[in-house]
Image 1 (cartoon, rainbow, N blue to C red):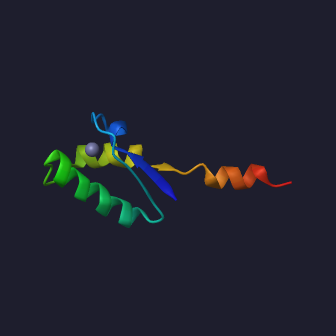
Image 2: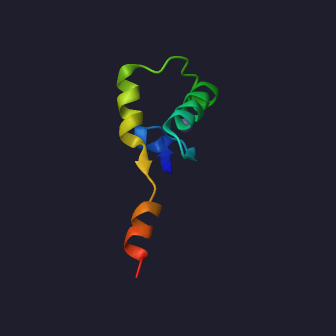
Image 3: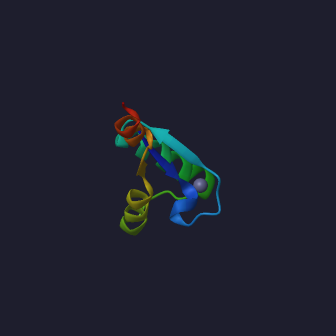
Length: 68
Ligand SMILES: [Zn+2]
């Protein structure tokens, strides 16, 4: 599970999304970018920002260190 927050790419926006697959997440981000920010084409620069802003969920480490 990964999370993405729109404000992490420098937008003044409260949108955030979670997804199991990067493909699905990218679809949601593209959808959001078009509808809310009127971005029709995601430039390579923006794509780099987006990729940098996608973060793995804490769940993995929670499970890893939560075990006794
Ligand atoms: Zn946004």
